[in-house]
Length: 238
Image (cartoon, rainbow, N blue to C red):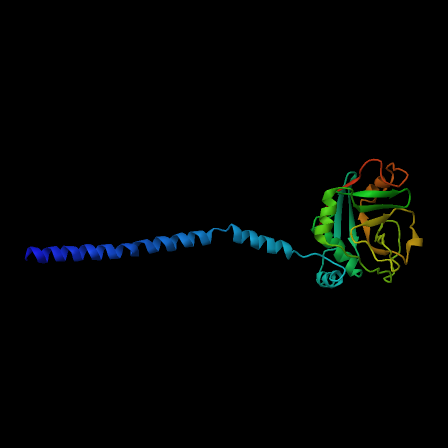
């Protein structure tokens, strides 16, 4: 091979090598792009934000439809309330479906936990389901704002031990019920002047002595207990 031919071949090899170099950098760029796409930073935040925006909240428009579906096949009908003074058990009436479903739903959502018996009227009722703390206000906001229609035609009376639902404090000619609160009749044999105006939806079947003990606690002029009476836990039981 002549010196000239050898030099020409050497230059050709160098040229081909230089031409292939950029091809080696392309996979690196592709891999780098894939790594960036797989990092769940901004994308996951957007997804969580969308989920939070779509969280189910009860309203005046959807509450009845929701509880109509929720009560279908709902066999659970007992709730145990553990309080500062002991525990008692409530049995809910199956044929008052919206109020029963509402109470079971709120119990399972943990709403009643750490609320109070905030109104105690001697020899009349104890009323629970409210509290002057941010936790309770936040839970109400997350669950939703709604009322329940009265259901007073099932023949239940306000006997001693009956659990019933108070009407809302808003302008309320139809006596719509405040779903977050309830009261229990202590009067012997009952408080029958309440019949027809409020909805009995269950009764105390165990621990009425605890209800009586709560009713004996000292209160101020507004029937608010002098010492907080907590519902420590509410739980659905078999």
